[in-house]
Length: 117
Image (cartoon, rainbow, N blue to C red; front, side, top):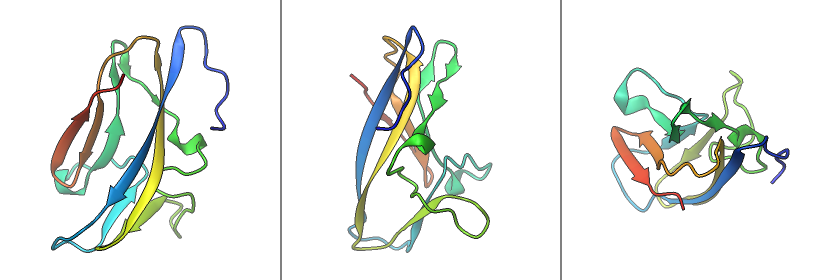
């Protein structure tokens, strides 16, 4: 990782995600750079809640961010996922040391929570 030393009382959480799209009716899916759209079906967003609010998303500092590393013609980072394709991508957050809140993924009309240990 290419992250600076965290400040006193803070730590990074780093997560490598392997994404597989085996079959489905929607083709393609897009992973946009933390895009919390007002329309729930368009939302693709990762966050880690904390006692002092949402922790700082530092994914853009990583070599292989989940949404890709090349911006489109609008300057938006995104990665396309079609049926039969898989890829790996990283996310990272700067959080308070000892924070036990889950990683939350909100996307494609679903909310998923993952325990971080």
